[in-house]
Length: 565
Image (tube, rainbow, N blue to C red; front, side, top):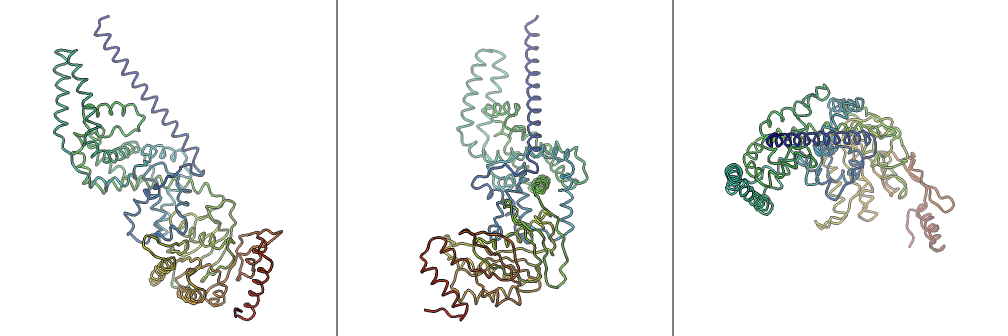
């Protein structure tokens, strides 16, 4: 057989083998992804978070923070909503986790909008094959530890252009050797080509250009991944995702030509294990085609920020809806909220079997709050957890259209809290200063005469008893308005008497059995009547004289209202 024919057959065999390996790798990846999304759906998320991950995810929300009422940082931190987000976050893409976080911090005040969101969630909850197909697409977008994909737009706005003169010279030199010298003197030509390739590869990694462009090329890579997924989604025509598909396909059409250039800049967008990307990596190292394409791509992308953001938002909404559907599947007891219209009368809330989503084997409680609610009881009895649960479910109702209870009925509410505060060492502010600033923001918001749920734990705990009770009673009384739904927890039983016309009293109590404190975590009507704090001193081995003296002083004060010297 002629040597040329043998060479052609060998080349064809190599191409065929390469194609088969690529096909096998793609099928293997698809099978792995499908098994994973099926396995984790409706389960507790497996994702592990590192320091700074939530901060990175929050960037997308903070760019849009001024648009309408949002859950502010104090309330978000008071309620430990980062942990709630981690429990709900079953997304498979960076846009998904960004948009889910944004959804949870941006309550809606329109039942129409909430029901539209719920339709998308229910669609994925009841259509398994469609859900899996969508997740397999979104999985290709992926997540990154280097920064949210939503950061891409702002990052590229500041990206500098680079000088490409030296890279043009290096490319021309290689091409001349490859197409002129190699055909004339194959041996010396190949030696020179290999020598120049080594120099180019060294210059690629050691030169200044790569250091300048590296972070921006990462952004382009993530963007290209989204465009590849947009290609895969072009055949999806489900009516429930029509709005998102329109925005995704608009981005696909806008960047159709640009995408061909970006392959040389970043790769195929199919992942680090793809064989095509390995070959493209070597081409970039030797010929510097990514540096040569960088400036022209940058110019085109800079003028299309709005399209890119809509692409991120639309893909994120699809991923977030699936994540919420998975969260619902995880819950042992759940309901969709029922919203009432505020018509100038006293705001009311009714919840049955309310339990905290972050607590295993949580105790459920029910309440109908038609005015202020004041909760008393000892430490660790359940006061703070109950109040947090009220606020969390109000947020979940207006963001995920999901509540962790059997029944929820209330008007649309703004939610603000003042609970888990601490000294601000950076600003040099004491606990008391931080606390009164936190309370003032609630008082300021209450003047707008719009339904507001406010939750306060231990009002003004940072000051002395006399001033605390005096100021607390006035503040809580000020919050007792028909458009307000205030909840407060306190150790000051005096407040339960001072405010009994404005606030309904509830309490949690514990009992001591066999020198053990047993908490039942059951909400009961009325003010707390037990006095177990002093009994605990006895249980922990305090001297009998100290315990008896403390009991006598407490009984005398309750009888006379005067502390004996």
